[in-house]
Image (tube, rainbow, N blue to C red; front, side):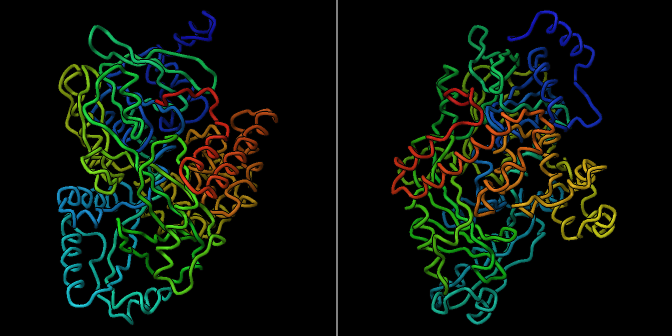
Length: 594
């Protein structure tokens, strides 16, 4: 362990031995004191698995391993869900278009996962959502599409969402009055599911912590440890203060998505597959700009375009283009935004304009490279390989199938573990907040009265925290001002900011504004108007001096300015140059990112 006196180190090692699992009344809490305890455990224990990457696959792998009784640690260089897992289309879906590509196994698997999330594992986070599929061709299109949707409705097992409903042109226009009359000859309504991807990933990680996993963010892998020809652990750096430690493990699992190839090079091992990054851009517009009772799925020349209901907004996306620049900060261009506007406006009676856009985000899909050069043709199936003794890599797949990917990763690592691990049981393990959620929905009026809140507000909290809502609201005991909405982001309460730091591991302003909440994409100011208020609340928990809080606001505002600037640029190179100019919140990060 670096950066400590020997006496201090000795005292902390003694405490670690007295409390080897660092158990508290709430082991899923990821606050400042738990963060320090996690650092001690990383340096002083030997783990069965070390998972690199805090996206949904990494978090899922940690949960899978922990619930099999394995000792597991997860390290993430930035924040939980800071990459692809906070920038998706926010759907739990089978992938309707994959039926046309005859990928029935992938669709069946994804639909089964959707069913599990809706009914057992995360009903507080994953919700049904309806879409209209506009029909534009007579005679053949309705039976063709109906046959595909029949498969879609039945392949996933027991149904927890309604089946398809056929609509005449008049019926479709009543459901979606925003459509041009000439944009369709009829329609079919079907259901999928959606979730706040960042909050879901965070909850998977906290559930893993609940079952004993060590979860630590701002902890970058800088070197792989070896014993003879096998990987025996990793060396990590705390990118907040520069400390380093060695983590010993029987196996290391690379769950870094689009960074998979970079980590393979750092390990010195030859990869078994190659990952390509495909950029997907989404725009967010106010709900009243598209008058509709359902979302839309539209065909494009390359793929499909979704218009997805999102609270008081619509999410419109996505694009699908190669990206070979900065993996941490993919940048949306004016061309990307124009593409989305052009395609959605082709069916809207009242077109959207750039002035209607409240938020923009870009994410990278980690696709397994195939023979075709078109990213939309690359495989969404996942691959897992034992790259070297003690080192497993997994990549590809869809957000929806993260749990299956995680189980496969742990199975692949089993050969390096002492003894045979138990089979995966995560299909039977509800995420934190799921147990008791339905009862609390029925009791929302009573909870609201108890805390002096509107029932609508409590229902919103329940859909973000589930049965953990009492834990959130308890932080406002004696501080009623925390139950007031943020001044420039009234969808969120001050207590949610405090909880994000004290329980959910947020360390920087962007962690709260971009992921613990979605203020960065839901408000036209993108978080700048409430940055100082949020920084003040965070600083109370993290002990920030005024200068540190001011620096956080400065860095966040620079991020927003750089993103706005990049979105006016004509191409990826120019947009990347503008976005990359913004400073990092985690200043001690180095390349490659692990």
